[in-house]
Image (cartoon, rainbow, N blue to C red):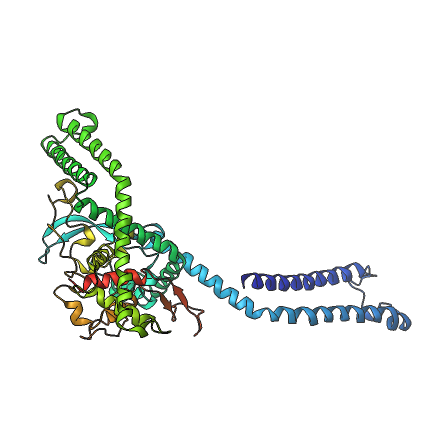
Length: 493
């Protein structure tokens, strides 16, 4: 379309150039053809100027005038229709160019004006923001790094109207309000320009699944290193404990002496910390190969439990594999996986759901714990220090996974009360909330703040130039298998 618009513009400029050059030639011709003045007259009067005789006037001169007119009429007859035939393409090209300009301006706001990049990372890849945790009374608790989710998948999770709502009014007390309705500094058009930029940076399904899978493997590795009785796992845990102890001694030494630093000090605590660090690296290196094998086996067992559930569901109802019954079959299988004792090995599948629920990839973009677990977004169980955080030790001894925070609590069977079947539960996780539409048996929600983890089709894109049939399609963040695992985990909290 841009090429068509450029071609038509070129044709128009060529026509203009021909007319202009013709006009110049005409003027020059008349100047050169002018006669010298005679007598005291500044210009020879027309009635005193001899002209061509009738024979020449009605012959060569007339033929030249008629021929020139015919040439000009031919040019006009051919070029103008060609020019106007390109009008639709030129119009569409202008819309595309306007959208490019909007996206460029949105990128400038993201990286400069509003500085979204400071929290959400370059190209929306995810990041963190340093913020203060306070009590309800406003008393200081700690300075923490809050995970800011990736925005390069945000249009898979939310509709554009929902994105605009968050931009206008902020989210969870950490994301500020940027739009005028929420008291922010940006205009409606500037917010639209940011949405145009977000469309540009969305990543594809393969990249999404690579990130999710990497986060899952990392989560399973942590789980095995924490729980496995294999010699390599025990060695890593012991080395981590020793390193933590020596690092603590170094911090205490620094508090006793403000100028203390292990970079220019060979104190015993520094030597011990260095040795502990080397021992930990060695233990982690030795564990790398067996850990990778153990992760593969762990994931294979989790997937095998789901496959068995599908087989058991079909044995109970042979019509499930009839054409068109795929989702009914899936619902029956995840129902078995969610009921205690429903499928041999289902505990592994539910632990797989827990790993997905707490997936750390892309600053927690693909996780549920980011909203449903208090403290998870700022690593409340990690070791904090006075120097960095204004607080010594962890803020929480352990997470109450699914206990609720920005999102509701999922504990004590709340998901069973809200969703009668595991199938409707899975459908909700895939679709997410919709502004103005409630969900579940209790008629909750309606604010559009719960993201969808399935594929999303945007049929009402914001901004100028879109028609009723304009739409964008964005890939799912989680596969059906992954959503089913989360459902099985949540329904057993």
